Image 1 (cartoon, rainbow, N blue to C red):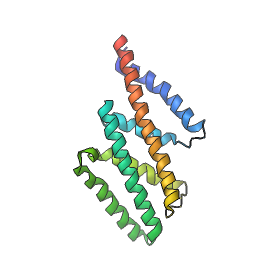
Image 2: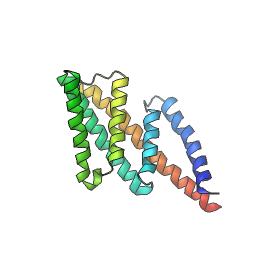
Image 3: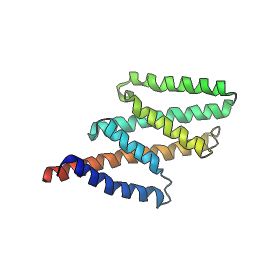
Image 4: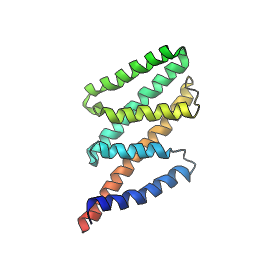
Amino acid sequence: MNMINALAISIGVLAAVATYLCLGTALGLQVWALFIGWGSFFHTGGGTEGLTKSATNHIWGVVIAAVTLIIVGTVGGSVAVTSGIVGVSVAVLVLGAHSAALSTIPAGVYGYAATAAFALLTGVAIGDAGAMAKAAFIVLVSLIIGNVFGFVSQKIAGAMAAES
């Protein structure tokens, strides 16, 4: 079996499992964030290195976004003030790439964007550090589980393709 067909089968089956895990349990996982993590795993090259790079940079992006939202929620102010705070935080996110561990900027952006989207679209009290930490944790766990699903789907597909 060729690798594309093997990936289609492994990803399709695991996508059903992932969706059930998110929608059919009380874990609170977000299926869309899980799929972002899954895609990020492949985007960063896959394998153990891709898993590590993707997860590490997701953590960085989630932390920067959570801190940013807490500051925005605490400081309040105009759109100009909020825009300035976000601009500075994104600059910090990118400056993290001076560290080799944080050099996969797109994966950091995925973590940042997913955290901001979840918090803002679900009405999390962003000035409440506890509420924001809980929201960030849900997104982070969903992203990391997505990375793991990517790793597993790649391994299964590799085994299926090798058997042919």
